[in-house]
Image (cartoon, rainbow, N blue to C red):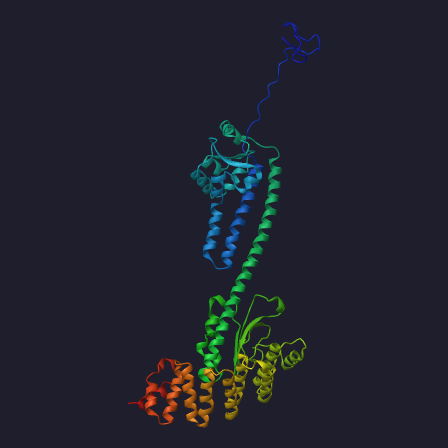
Length: 497
């Protein structure tokens, strides 16, 4: 035989090597192979905590967006993701995000990759009450959802052969060292992660509330902007804004009673003959107006803006928070453009008009027009002149009123309202029926479907004794568009029988 240490030939009877002294025939210790075991309690707890965190975060994204934009589809999709998280991850990759971090995987009792329906059963078993407690006992726990689905959670380096050699009954009885300390550490980690989830949830909730507030504010702005159009139609039919706020056509009650606008019940509407203003309180703060209650306000000047001005305090018919002095300061500003100063003059005139200071109002309106005289055909000049017209109409200054309408038609010869208003407000009051007939005829040429002008033209023809022409026009009228004029219409029609 040979020496195991130095390799020289040695007689079989020798117990020691005569050269190096090594003891011969020393039994070589047999090393037991390393025992392969499932994932321990520490990793199982980490898997649970990490996966609970990840699936809630992933599901919260579509749910949060869905709540913000009122999409039940997105909310349902988020809940669906929450429910199928384990099924998708474990059936495709044998591991979830938590198991990816801890270096573990799901495997069957037979050592093979579990099938889809086995993973479904494993995931459904998690819904058993108190199931999570089933893997807190023992060093290498096999929980209820493991045993029911005949699956294990093992380290990534475990092979199918290793699993087949495991004695599961013996493993269930094994205890790991320092399990209690590990559980306490995991418990503290769980508390920390739950605190993070709570913070994230509060941030998401705050974002969703802000999004809902913005949506409601947008609804308020849309509704009030619609009122602007209805208010002008009301003025055209009634000759002024007086009574606008009580008119059912404005649908202010719909605005206040709508479930989408319940937080905004502070609706204020003020009107007089010349002007109106409507405002609604908002909840989503504008950085430029922070620190004050905010409103969205529209008025007869065409303003539609966020403001801190509470028009309910003094029955104001203007959204502007500025007083006359503020407008004067704006006009005196060296940085003011023509448009800015023109708007300031216009608003100053509007304020004077609301205070019945008509002479001052006319002066400011004229300053606004004069400032932009080189661009006299600017449509804003028509608006300013219409404001002057309301003053002269209320004062029964018919010749001055006629002059205003003449100026409007010089700016825009296609302005049908100017023809109609001049015929009705000027010539109708001065008895100049021939001139009124000419204006109504021109207005109808520009707008053939205007039922009010057609009715007034027929009425003027009757006054002039032109019965045939009157009857021809009265036959073209659709009475459903002449609310409030039914009696006059019927009186004219009787003359045609």
